[in-house]
Image (cartoon, rainbow, N blue to C red):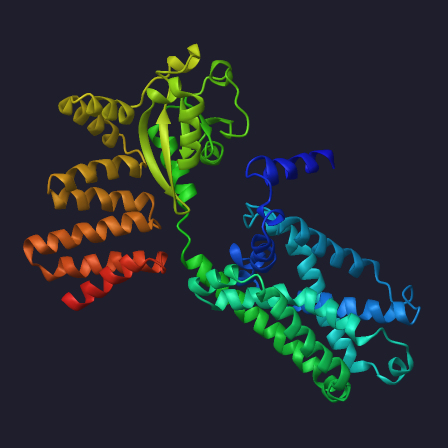
Length: 468
């Protein structure tokens, strides 16, 4: 528990500052309202989330009635209590934080699914029960139950509105600190009317509860299968492709570190030492460990340059990747490392080609690059590098040839598909051949499939279709 407490404190407050929700009323209400919407939690599992919130509301309502009738122990289910309080406490711990990635919200997943399942079970069992006994039992005041239901379900309604609204609507939600209160009042009023006058309606609908459960389960399966298919159809496996590529362009004695260092040493045999810049600053870090390369995203690169200027000032860029939509650069620091073992790192032909190119020795660079390509190495970085130089020189056939070979090594890459589409379009503009237009359209349509929200790619596809 001490380690968990330290991690929560470091991640929640240490890195990202004191929660703004505790300093600004707008941020407080915004944190409650958009937790399940912000990172796509609700969008990924809407039916289960709705069922879970209904289940929590029903549990609180039944608990209030049990307390009023002094039969709390008879109606107490330890499993349900644990799941409900797990979810509520986790939600309360997460919503104030300034940084709330989806992985943090994974703590909500298990109790949410459990509560949703219990709610469906209770809904089904209600078809076999009678209301006659429960009508004789003493119940809690309706206003108590409406307050509990309103407090619990208001964040759910906010998530539904935000998912189906626009960015402008999300901004208006943030600007209005009264929205949560308004929703609470509306939901409370609806709950009051249902509890006060809807008893007969519930009794009439009770026999259909079994059918409702079946329909919910069918809808749950359809929605999640559709969601899974949509997710699978846009996977680019960029991390795996970068892992294989990095193993091909670096030497076997390379030791990598940085924010993506461990991730890019899973399947290629490279050595790695994990280090997250910005959390701890160790002046002796590069003295102690023979690190030859750093793999950094933008924020970690900025911190590394600030904390270790002597190391980063002479760092050479080896390649760059687009991993899960984020740009990541690979730097070689063996020449500037204070570690003796790191300084004797032997450059690969690919790295020598880049070194000579940076020195302005085109012939030497070409020699080493040809040596590397003749080794049949499965590297798309080398092919892309050669293709980019061909594009700059207007040699579109050479660019297409190398990009097609690169695409073999990373066949799911939307970035490579887009570059191929642009290259074929340039060939079409140069030769006026319809076949190049058709090829450009194939690759750009594939890019649009993998990046359906990119408006520029969508526009390019529409223009090409109009030019056919």
